[in-house]
Amino acid sequence: MVTATEPNNFSTNAKAVQIVATSSHSGQQLSENVAKTVPEDADFLDRILIRHRKYVAFLVPFAIMQLIWWVTAFRFNWFALYESRWQMPVVMFFGSTVAGMTSEGGGAVAFPVMTLLLQIDPSIARDFSLIIQSAGMTCAMCVVLIMQIQIEKRAILFGTMGSVPGFVLGSVLLDAYLSAAQKKMLFVSIWSSFAIALFILNSQHNRRTYDVIPQFNFWKAAVLVLTGLVGGVFTAFAGSGVDICTFSIITLLFRVSEKTATPTSVVLMGINTMVGVYWRAVWQGDVPSLAWEYAAVSVPVAVTMAPLGILQGTIIIVMSFGFFTSIAKVGQALIDDSDEQQYSMLNANMARIFMLDIITSICSRWQGNE
Image (cartoon, rainbow, N blue to C red; front, side):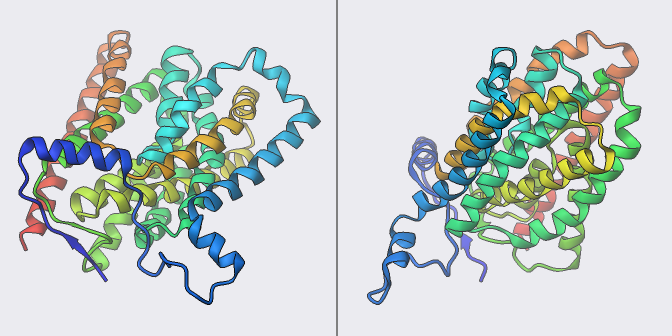
């Protein structure tokens, strides 16, 4: 059943207060078939699962991943790496929290820090982002599934059908032909476009939203596959992308509620990062040792903060918009150091993506008026 949320006729100040209150205190929306009260005939285990659903959902993946990491860390003495690789665990404390709370993976924080601040090669930053998200986002995905939070399963299915071949094609055909500066600038253009998408979403105060995609049909499935394909290509050189592409499409074009779109993007990114790590580590087999070392010391942070981010509940659109606008401004330094041809390429990409955001917004408004 598709449930629509009608707009409220609040004043501007009341809306602002409502957004802050919702972002700070409300939880994610659970599926309709989830038991919210304890039945009288429930046994001991059922009572624990219903009454303490959040704690169980967090502790199960947390305990498993922490146990595996500590045993492996003692075996290979990973603790010695902290002396020289301490930067990324600190970064991922915030990055993994962002990954769980919003539609952006931890790679959205890791990639710019590693490439712009630490001056690490984008390929290493991409591999680290995939590895760390395959741990953190997978734990966050487990929280979503155990709690039975409302997700758009068709967006995950068709998005993955497009993103897997998109990632493979991007890794084989595109990644080798892009220079380090071009990858950095493409990253800036991608996230700048997402900031524009969030701005458009945040400006639609009186829009109707749905729990899942309404009136699902062939063309909507095709759009999701194409979105996954493009997002998979982005993920191939930036370590993330399919999550924010899917989030933008299902919220702007299909008018799905952010409370559904956020955990949907988390599950989608968790699946795709596992596929990405498998492809890079097994089939291509050239993951740099530096990426593994940074990931080894960052895993215990990621598997803790990403699930906690999910438990915080809803997406904070205003904070996300400011976050990605800041990334775009940091990227200005890259533009200043680039030659005229690369600058023209960035402008062209920004123009194309900006026009796509505008077209998507127009289609969304047209669909809402039907």
